[in-house]
Length: 176
Ligand code: S3P
Image 1 (tube, rainbow, N blue to C red):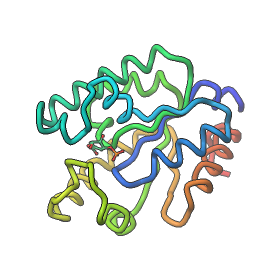
Image 2 (image 1 turned 30 degrees about the horizontal axis):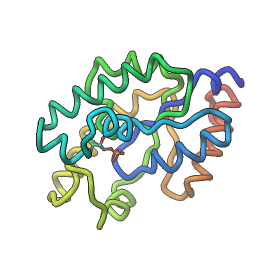
Image 3 (image 1 turned 90 degrees about the vertical axis):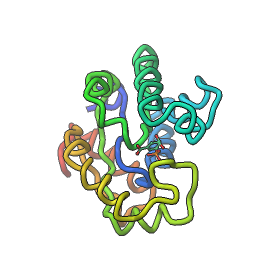
């Protein structure tokens, strides 16, 4: 099922699931180029993500995110790591589908909390009450679960997650 890989792969999931690290590993495994959507946004806006949130609010950031996604949909197939909130705008879904197979990197709350502790640069997690972040994570689950494929990442290293995605895609997206 090489075709499934060749049409592109989109990684979705909450902050801290490892989309960027896994995406890089996966791109080199399958021979596609890698794009980090948050990085694209910071390049296009010439501002960091926290600066965009301060200057334009979350709504402004979401508009930039959708614009970057539309731009990406015009490029060659690649492996894309998206920001954790990409799933929240319904207009993003057809674009995500057009970029290839959507893979949800699913991670338990406890693992995420551990991974997010002490990190910075995420306005929706930095300095917030854990209950608030957990509620955001819980509220987004049904959206992430609309992905074409789900990979549980808790006990896997980034390279193991990348390999698991490759194996599943080679098997036509089925569990093996
Ligand atoms: C966000 C996740 C971030 C970034 C922005 C908003 C979110 O990306 O896009 O801070 O709404 O979950 P990561 O998932 O790569 O941290």
